[in-house]
Amino acid sequence: MPIKERTGVVVSNKMDKTAVVSVVSRGTHGKYGKIVCKTKLYKVHDETNICSIGDLVTINESKPLSKTKRWILAFVKQKTFNTNSFNCGD
Image (cartoon, rainbow, N blue to C red; front, top):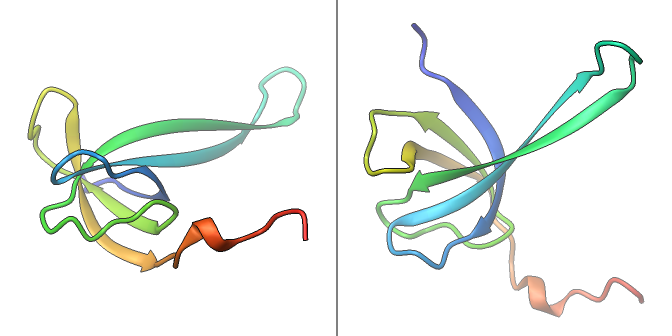
């Protein structure tokens, strides 16, 4: 079986060596045909604590590392820089 790979955005990095990644999957509704987005949160092992909130990352499936952690960080695709300085209204 091939190793599963997902791409998502880091939503939390408050735990030591663990980040929470939000992955959005899109599909069509079976009956109505409308495109539906589903969001799933994965706890990811981040050995060097390089993830920050808002980073776009790729994760790979691995053996169970703890009760809820079954994914490891493959690499960071895009870093975000100081998300607190952005103004959405201006």
